[in-house]
Length: 146
Image (tube, rainbow, N blue to C red):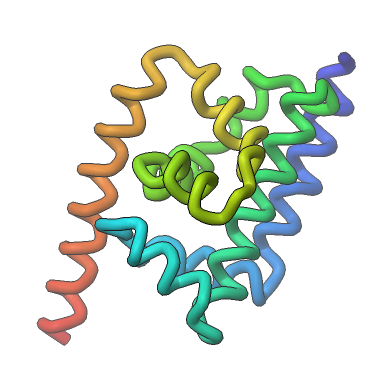
């Protein structure tokens, strides 16, 4: 695989992340901290949050698919991104249960494969979950102060 082609595709994916509706969806997902499968189900069925939930996860599943299938160099992709780890850490504890409940065994399979290929993935996800909770808490406290 040509590194230049990988870089070009990564930049195109970055441009998609800057699309206005995607920015709103990503901002919503940044504050979404599910504490149960019910929180995820609620996000999916709520007419206000469902488009954002589906947009963010659909984007990262698509991007991960490009990597898993060899269109983008995996190391380069992971070096250029970090948001995908934060997004995945939020759903990872509930993913198997969601797959069973929704009878969709391959749901987010490319995304999962990409993340789990990372060294010490489980530890990385656990650390990121705690960090993310801290970010959301700090944001909420700042909002109260204003």
